Every structure is written in C-alpha cells, then in structure tokens.
Length: 372
Image (cartoon, rainbow, N blue to C red; front, top):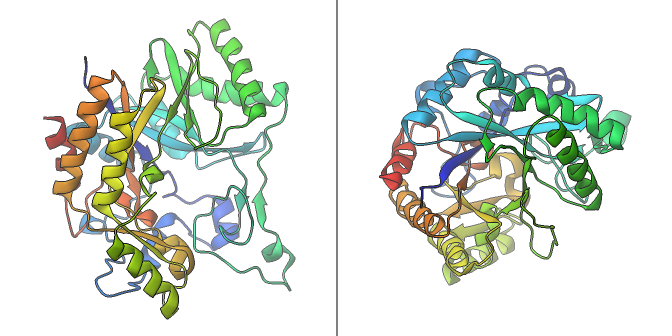
C-alpha cells in the first residue's frame, strides 16, 4: 500500500482577461471580490488577507512557480486546475496552465479540471449550473447586456467540436508536468450527462490512437447520479458531501439568522460535524471507484453575501491535520491513489492552503504533518 497523492484544486481567476474586464469592470480578478468582503456577524473573519499582502498575478511565471515550490515543500503532489472551455470559441483563464505546461522547473504535477457549464451572471437569478466570479447581481431591466443572464454559453457540440477540445487538452497531456496515472492522463469533469459520456468515449479512442492507455476521467460525485464506472472512469467525492447535518447549536444559529433578516438565508455549519461526516462515509464506502475529498475551511460570503452564503465555523489547522491524517489512513487502506483538497487558493470561498495574515503557513504545515 502506498500513500495517496495529495491533489489541491486550483483557481486560475487571479489574472486579468478581456471578458472579466467587460463583465465586471476594468482590472477585475477574484482578488477584487476578496478585498471587498465585509464581516457580517460578530467574530466573522472577513476580509481574508494573504500573507505579506501577496495579491499575486497568475499571468506572471514567478507567481506560479512560487505556488508550486510552496506546494512541493508541504507535500502537495499536484494542482487540479479549473479549465473553462465553454465552447470552441471561448476557452478562458488559460495563462496559469500554460505556464505550468511549459515550465521546466515546476516541481509538481497538474491536470485540467473542466468546469463544464455556462458562465452566468448570478448564482441566484438563473436556475441550473452557475459559475460567476463575484456577488449575486440583480440585472438592470433598462440595460440589455445586464439583463442577459448568460455571459458565455456552454456548448458541448458534436464529434468535430470534441476533437478540437481533445487536441487542446492533448497539448497539455504531452507536457512533462502533466499528471499521468497508469499510462492515462487525468482529466476531471465537474458535470456529467449522457452526452458527456459520448464525448468521453470518443476521447478514449483518440487517446489510444495517440499511444496512451486511455484517459483517467474523474467525475464530480453527485448523489443519485448514475455515472458509469469502468477502468477509465472514476468519481471523487466533493467536500460538501459532509454538510448533510449540523449540530443543534448550528441549526439554532441558522434559524435565528433567517428570522433576524441580517443574514437572510446565510447558513452555518460546524467544522467537526462536516469532517466527521466525510470520514464516516469514507470508512463505510466499498466503491473502489470513489476518491475522497478533503476541505480546509469554507466561507463563500465574499461571493454570495448575506443571501446565500455558507459559513463553516470552528476550524483550525490542528483539526484539519488530524482529520486529513485519518482520511489518508482510510484511503491508503482502501488503495486509493488520490485525495482531493478544496482548495489551494479559493480565497473567495475561504477554502485555501496558501498563507494568510491570520494563520500564516499553519495549514500548509498541517498537510505535511498529516503525511508524516
């Protein structure tokens, strides 16, 4: 039995692109959202501030190499970088992965994690899968652009489109830094349906023609979703699967918050309860195709505000290390090759391993300690 590789999910939304400047204002990156965050209740730790005010720019190679060095020093094996291929004409936020692809001194592996959905103006105004880099925005009825909830449509297309996407991904597969497992490049997909399955089958054919054993697809796990499982397809359990229950104290907080109106629909969760649910599920699991997800912390109020924010309370680096160590033991015993951590740098969701002014390097050191 070998210790699973630690994969940290990675957000590339820290460099300017024309689309962000157009939709959210000149100079927008996710740091804007992070800096604008406000405390919404007594003891609320917002805004989060990176150590030494390191509001880095991920279009700069030095920033990406700094992250990679830091990750390697503390036992992180790979970055699962979010991949925003909306359609054949829109593939955004690619600069960090291009730097990782071309670097000869990265030191860690990376792979693409495809967030395959439309880019919508708001999480709350449009039903379905949503992705947006800022708070909920109420569309302006007098402005046609503002009133359009779809900023960039997700179009899966047909085999011709799938081949174009594959050829782009293949350019990454060929990098010395791309994560290959058992002769298969890893490729994570966040949203699954039957059409995606057809695309994956087609990609398998293309990959095998190119000399790979196939592609190691990893789908985000959803309950009641029947994802086919074979030697190429694996699911991973996202961190929020542990949010099924809360303590009485947390339920009381949620009730009071809703009644008071100062935190309309904000929900509170207990760090220990969430982690114990994750561990309990992992211990009872018999599915060899399911990889487990860990989480550092969670507070998405910088993005969702009072109306739809979720806050996990009671976390600490010491607790994180203890729980991660147990998850490593379970995964090792079950011969699982990977553990996914949410996240390396999701600052807008309070889910990050990177050093901040409050904990400095303690969460990174917690990973290293759990591995030891």
